[in-house]
Length: 296
Image (cartoon, rainbow, N blue to C red; front, side):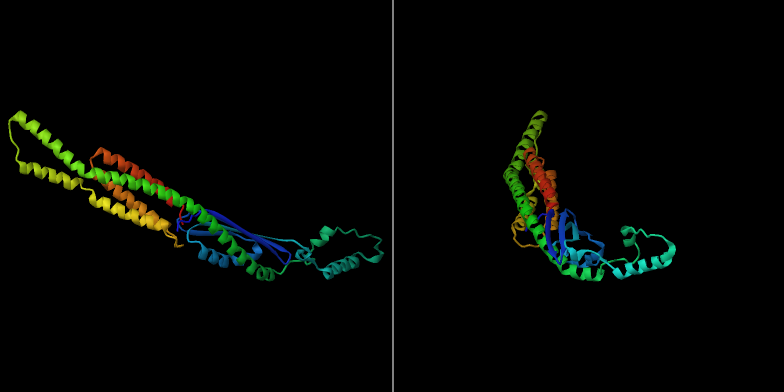
């Protein structure tokens, strides 16, 4: 199945007065790479989230971002009233009732004293966030995959168009190839006859046939045409298969094989028409290679 490596997915929910929002973004990458941005309090979830994303995606540079913030009274930090009273009692004892002084206390400074504001139980937060974060990651990954599939259908249409262009050019090459030998024979015979007529000599027909045979052997591209068409058949099978397994690397390898055969045909053939067709074939292969870089 043709699936793009670029995509975006998100999911969010609120549980126990805490709002969770998770985003997934993916870009092209030869391998799978996942980076995460998590609140410090739930950083311990990274291995589980990484394993989940790896099960869903095979290639691409993926960025996961999780945000959390409180939405109700229950999410506020607690103030330890006993600690505050203890601080105030110590101040009264230090100042004394008969000192004739009045104490002016800044609440902000009071809250900054050690132990006044109780930090949340991080272990409890992590425990509560684990099932929520994993569920959101699952939903966001499914959403990202749907976007990848949508882009993949567009890529598939482009690949099919380039494939058809290559096939049309190869048909022209196959049609032209047999006449190249005949034309070479005619040109060679004409040149030899002209030279011999001037020198009043004769040429052995065996030597002429041998020369034409050597040229025919050197310019024979039937084997290369068969291989490049076989590669195109496999290419067509891969882009049309609905199997969800990634095919990007296989397609990348096939484009290299297609280009190798096209180069061989171009180097063996000295015919201008065939070479023009091969230039078009190589251009289409380059466009395929560009698109394949974005296939998972």
